Length: 349
Image (tube, rainbow, N blue to C red; front, side, top):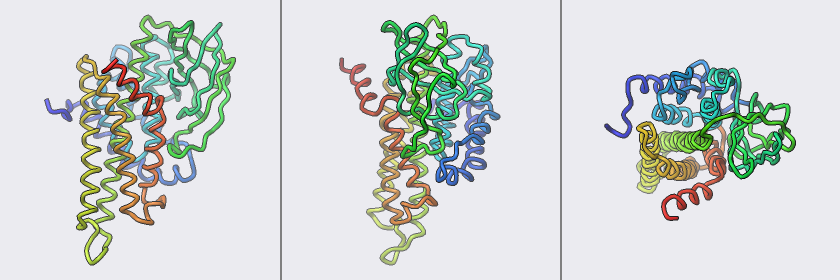
């Protein structure tokens, strides 16, 4: 089977989300990003498509279609709005943990009636006596969250818990990128937490982490390809030295290199998703894809800004937004350096 081949049902999901991204998301993304308006309408639109339960088993009310359509659809969303893509990823992470715990809150999270925000181990939260301590510095979706699903250490072991928004303090952040994702720093000191009783918390946490790694990778692939496409269009129309920029060898080489890096990241992302859907270990591929894809997006956006010249720094041309989003994606999930350390520990320790 070809690395990018989908089943009929999976392809329907990807095509539906791609149409939604082109028809609904693209028209509003510039204004939302410029004015830092939370992407609630687009989030509700994804909820209506039923994609928040994509990874949840059919027996639990989900679609049970696996990671392949998830990454395929996120490419389309990432090409338009990394903010919306990151909100979707967080919702799916929470659904994975709630499914494993058999929590009653799973259904409203899958339906999108509850906007859930995931806070992982990288934030260093502690749980003792039913109360949390610690602070999460950068959490997408936190300003609007109806529920926090957190992973904290209790007696040295990771546990999964839910926290009501009223129990935490939230300070909105004016981040470089993800301007429509409602990012905030969240204080959990003294917050009452409800520990979820899952027999295999480690497996559920690993699945949630994996969803973030391949999800961000797919988002970055979409953003990188969008930058290449925007650069190609501008270079074909812009005349310099008597011919289009696209006919300049230096410009063509830049676009080829950006496309090469982004396509490589794309195949690695889909490979990781397919391995996991087949019940195999896709963690190494996911970690590599996560780092490679974000690097490729930042490179493609940087080159796109240069190709656009002065226009590249204006919001109307999108590419500066992709650059800001890419640089912000770099620091999520523990940051690129932590992900590389994880990979090194798995492969060479």
